[in-house]
Image 1 (cartoon, rainbow, N blue to C red):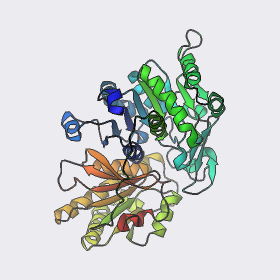
Image 2: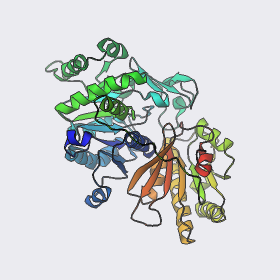
Image 3: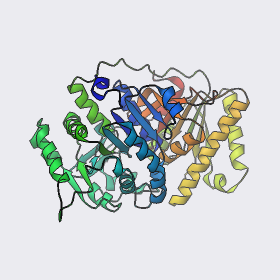
Image 4: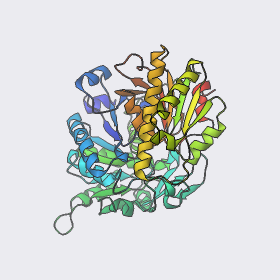
Length: 454
């Protein structure tokens, strides 16, 4: 089994650049049977002891909302933890749409900060995650527009090309990431994968040839691997795992990285059978959902929800009026105290928000959530089930709750994980928490937080 092969060390350590994506990776490894936990910061020795032996360790962060200098500061202790972990595969988990920019959430800045954990090899970028409709072909990224929606090249995607902070205006990931400092990215294309077939040695020799360049042809900044369909998962996983056995390997990309590893571990017989996770039971108490995402998918989920008492939070007042936030929190807490599921969602602004204003709205939304939960606890009725929609909102709001870890509970939809909170505060420990990105989930997702999957 995997423990025997790795002599008790974790097989993979990942850092999620936002909390929603980090929980998707948690679900991926937990559902494969790996003992895993997602920490909400670099764990202390006491927290590691509470968690017990782990085969997969995650750290959730908010790097995608930070400028490069702040990213470097945040990722420095992460790099130290990764290096000390003994894990052969170290993963910077970015959003599956790779939305990032030179000035915020720079993947290039992240690679620069973490490169020391795997100095012998360029970073390896896995470009897709087919199970959630993310595909990379000949270096170009394509994404589905919501569950069951049409697949668009990312620079023509109806939502991602208009992202309020990091609009995606370039589909070729090599060009997109060159703007962020990864100027030389070599591609392992889907055609090369097809020609190599099951011969991992062919692919490994290609990778090693890229690493060996010297003099006038130095090693590239990164290697990009296409991923178009599920059949490629074990092929790519075999390459990553073979290279990681030689020296630590830094991988970049969505949870497709772990899906590739798991696929080859299954082929190698390193993973046993895993019992199915228990589905989410109907809620036994009040349920709160906070929606900070402006995506069409999230707005459709709000409109389709029939289980919730909905409250719109005016963005302008939230930022400008000192008393507006506590008034909203009191209204939400009152509804929850009366046993009504409550859904709070930020209003759609009259004009496009700039990055600084978007960040301020996410921060104030997080404070609104924390104040609501404080009021609930003060009434002797701590909240037991919570959903948060929106990448930046999820990261900031979860940090505001005072948690130190998340354990996997179940999956509500592809890319949408239900977790169990770990906290030193007994009123919050055990909180059932759903975090989701704006593009994830079907129309009835929010209602299932109340009713269970049924």
